[in-house]
Amino acid sequence: KAGVTQTPRYLIKTRGQQVTLSCSPISGHRSVSWYQQTPGQGLQFLFEYFSETQRNKGNFPGRFSGRQFSNSRSEMNVSTLELGDSALYLCASSTSRIYGYTFGSGTRLTVV
Amino acid sequence: DQQVKQNSPSLSVQEGRISILNCDYTNSMFDYFLWYKKYPAEGPTFLISISSIKDKNEDGRFTVFLNKSAKHLSLHIVPSQPGDSAVYFCAADPGNTGKLIFGQGTTLQVKP
Image (cartoon, rainbow over all chains, first blue to last red; front, side):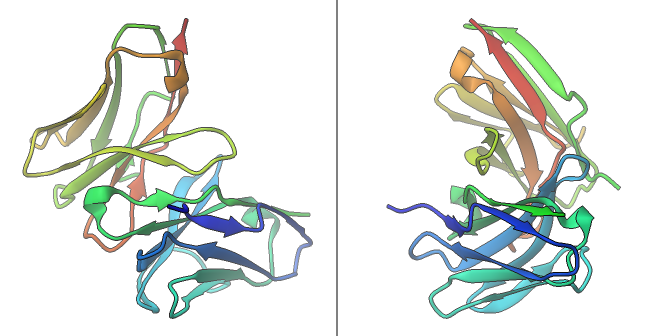
């Protein structure tokens, strides 16, 4: 069974640019969540989608947005990149919390 | 405001001994907790979870204990193995909506 796939693995962008990250969940998983990991703030929840609807959103500015497609694949977008957006971005998929949330390997974003 | 806290940034134990990782939370409404293990440059891997209706859950070498009155949970690893060396995160799932609230993590080193 394929795991959660995130692309790309690494990305370097310039301040002011925008970026789109992709996440393909485990087949059959309808919930996809996104997290940002930084050394100072740890793992912070960004948002969660279920059946193409955003169910929950963390405390991030509106520059951070996401969407989910009918096949459950999800994308997140960050506009007007800032240096502080440099982080590991992780997505996770799930059918039920009893089985835990399965994380992908993440996308390492560096903003220069 | 840190709702989930792991007060020990690091822990070192000898191979074969018990590792005990601790986690405290502030919100008594949290009803589900999970432990994850993370290696550098990889996503977190789900280890074990516990519902607030239980006070203990076991899975092989891993046991999680929950003390609701103290708002405290702990992960016991017995016996510890060098391959267990990683960062361990506890997380609270406040409402089964894909939003996990993570602690800051504890780095476990198991010495041969």
